[in-house]
Image 1 (cartoon, rainbow, N blue to C red):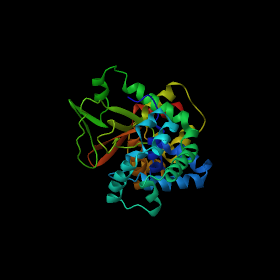
Image 2 (image 1 turned 120 degrees about the horizontal axis):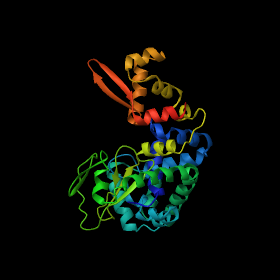
Image 3 (image 1 turned 180 degrees about the horizontal axis):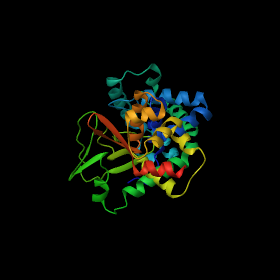
Image 4 (image 1 turned 90 degrees about the horizontal axis):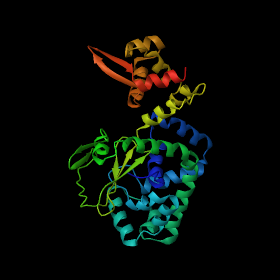
Length: 311
């Protein structure tokens, strides 16, 4: 289990969160703050570069997330600048086979030192705007997840506890992904890296020759529970976190309510209520079950604790 945050993986996932339509409930405060305070030119340049060099899809070059990133931003950027030319050519060949790249990437693919320095300079500027100001928040979430995952003190308990992100069927760890692939460790061990900005599906290096690594999304519920246990309360914080509409939906559920009942209580359309309950359910704040022709929503213990702590 990684000891802390890997800044290069966080940058790769963060550009996806900045550009997708629904970046997730827990990331909304970060997203609003970045949009409000960050240098738009720097963020835009970083997103454009990352979207080309680490595109959403079945492949992106491993050289952008070297294992040295575990030792911090400086070590990771040094590793990118030191990537062997043969590896760059091979990885860009794989990249262009699935996603054509613009002309400005050719010097990078050729291993031009100046082009690689430009890449790392852009990454450093992007990190300073999007990741660094929120370092404490990201570190706390990653550390909280790591502590919970390793609480059993043994590898078997750790791997079983990765469900539903991964399924431990000894001696195989299964991860749902968009294509089938087997990675044989061959005695090398497996490094698990919790990530703040990763969502839905764990990710691994494409090159089986690199140190076996799986980067997975932290469970943000644990961060909320820790904050609630610590008594962190501020007026209006629930609405700031969830938005006024979703906080109203969470409150209106009461001891249980159908989608129709919520629409009537709040004066919202059925489609609007359905949209918001889906988000709250994915965030672990509601459960949904079908009763006949109706769908019944109930607050989870986390949803109730979050609501009561801000009343």
